[in-house]
Image 1: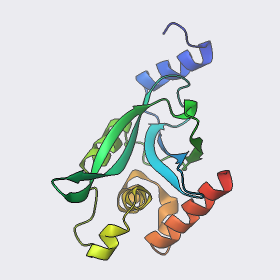
Image 2 (image 1 turned 135 degrees about the horizontal axis):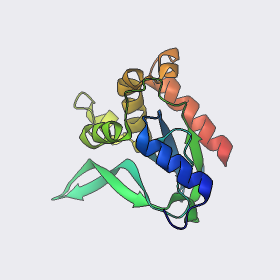
Image 3 (image 1 turned 180 degrees about the vertical axis):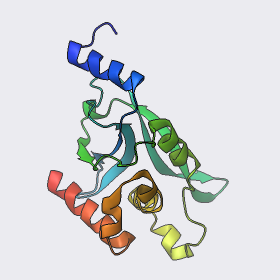
Length: 171
């Protein structure tokens, strides 16, 4: 593990030999609109620092136009998130309490999650965002991963409002 500080090397070694809790991070980048951000979701091992200059998987949905139709697709982008001039910050969610949850299992859920729920009306589809997709995943899967704070919110809109308020506070 050349080039890493001894503490980071020890943490990585520890992660490889034992199961550690997963922690989810919402990474925020500024857009050209005030108080509007691009969101991505990053699963990582709790207690291990996010990598400095090493790319890490960011999960998000993006609007695409194909054959005259707009739609959403789930993407995985390797990013060095904090080197961008648009980088705003990171919202760290509490670690998952379910010790059997692994980063690879969480990443598989992100890859398979529908980019847009089929039950949305055309108007709701028009107003769909990556932030809403992330909240949907948290509400749907978070309790199974041991993200117990999710159950404290009345509904998706309340959780989304809180996360939006926190993201605005970062700026």
